[in-house]
Amino acid sequence: MVSSPRLCWSLLAAVLLASLARPARLVAETVKDREGAVRQDQAKMENSGRWIYNDVEKGFAEAARTGKPLLVTLRCVPCIACSGIDAQVLLEEATLKPVLDQFVCVRVINANTLDLSLFQFDYDLSFSVLFFNADRTVYGRFGSWTHQKNAQEQSTASFRAALEGALAVHRGYPGNKADLTGKQGGPTPFKEPVAIPLLAEKYPRELDWKGQVVKSCVHCHMVGDAFRGYYRSERLPMPLEWLYPFPQPETIGLSLAPEKAATVSAVEPASAAALAGLQVGDGLLKLGGQPLVSTADVSWILHRAPDGGATLPVELVRGGRTMTVPLVLSGGWRLHTDVTGRAAVWPMRGMALGGLVVEELGPERRQQRGIDAGKRALFVKGVGKYGNHAAAGKAGVHKDDIVVEIDGLTTKLTESELLGHLLTKRFPGEKVKTVVLRDDKRVELMLPMQ
Image 1: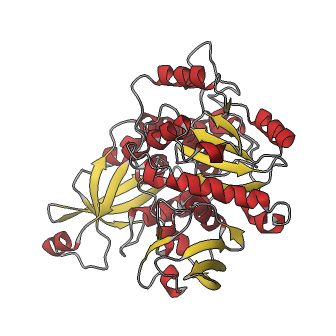
Image 2: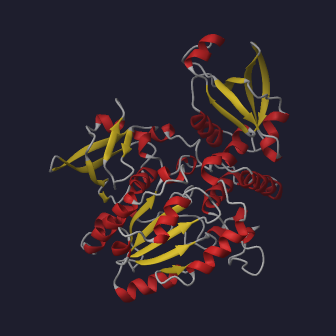
Image 3: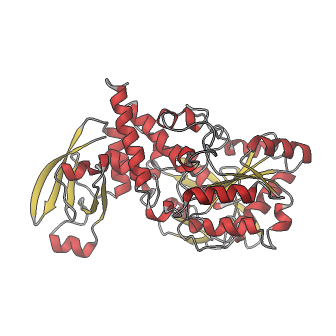
């Protein structure tokens, strides 16, 4: 523990609150009337003939009674991201109704008391789905970054494919239970979000429907923020799975068609996917022995894969033939994950970069500034002004500076890789030597870790 835990918790609370005040534009823009949106959702859904509202245990009981699989949708109602697919699912367009009829459906709008041993998913998404058996065995996961990045995207093809995939898994249960072992949640130090210290200080177990309901709500992305804050407060190296959560398939050079369950749409040359021999048009059936119902299942398997490398068998269909090929993840593969578009990156920037927003300097501008292609050159796009996100500005960093050295590192790194280094090697209270290029002059500064 740090010598002053109260001070550390206060600092980390400031990190979390700063991240909530300035969320990532693409993933956390909210409606103007957040209270009204939540209350309107409650009024509409509590009288729904299909959806059980905010009661997971009732859903499991109904699944046990009917023998149907359980579908749990987790939705941040005030968040605009994913509103398109959410609206279409609730409208139950003609192609979805007959499939949804085969599920017990639960809609959850807050994460306060989620059982974290069961509900492990991509917390940065504002529309996520988990499929369960009544005995709480996880069948699969769904969550779309295509929809997350475009609130107008209303396509439900990928969701329907996931529904059908989950039904296929359900029909094979319990004979396929061994294949589902890897889909189950791993150990966690806290049973529920409001047990995590950063959230326990601020949020109740139940939503305050008689008061300000939104202010009593734990949003899904706050679960990840609180876990990262916990490790930071304990002065522990942050686990890479929390630094680079739920890697998208592009991390291993694989793109999947957004309208399908898990069909290859592109393969990056010389990537792990290319070396495995994966080809455009391949339909992925299993990865690491786990049946795939969606792209989110691929991200889950990568999320749980060893940081030091592993070989994952890929079972696929190609030209009507089923085959298995080995996908080799080399040591350090997870470091290639891009986290810059996630809500999670904002508190991490506060902790490690004092609120800086940086991007790799392009080849032309490198040449203009005389910076070698293999050297560090991170252009400072923005400098925070509030709370601990103002720390870099107070330390002397200016917008348009170019970071050429930090913590003794001068080699080329992405912002995501830099965050990984600082959050595993440096801790609150330390200061890191940082050199920036400003008007062709090298300026040395000390960047505080928080």
